[in-house]
Length: 195
Image: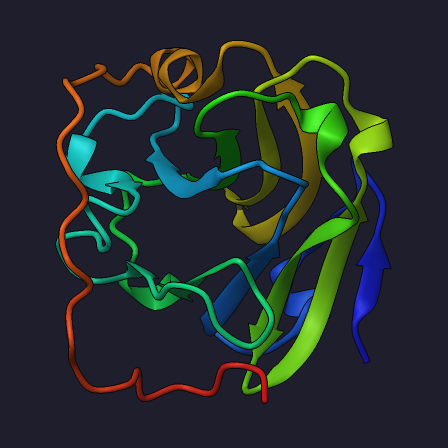
């Protein structure tokens, strides 16, 4: 049975699941709003020391494929596969974020969530609504972080300025925008997302 987290709740992943090959689903929407949902792989200083660990629509996986963006499925706006045992030792945090693409602010979002699924079973969910935010254009939803062992935190921290400001906050550089590539056609992942 899934544990419901509130903003600020944290737990050792081992207290939630023995699984190490995890599905992360994000559901976020609002009338007329478009979102970019990303994962930042951060070092011990909470910096994006390697741009290859900024996982988003233009770069859907990390070099060793420990973090993979899977696209919308199972009722989620966006989803990811995280294989903890493959994450390199210099990555200490995975921060899952949602930023507005275009006009709007986070106070306009409807009910949403970030959830972690292991072996097809949801183990934790952090639900949120636009009432928790105001004029922010980005939100840090949840983190996996390494503090002796991997843990999960429900963050829910709004951030003014959108994706560019969030990227700068994590020490990344903002590149000129390129058109999104066509979705790749391939085999389904070999693990168990929610049914």
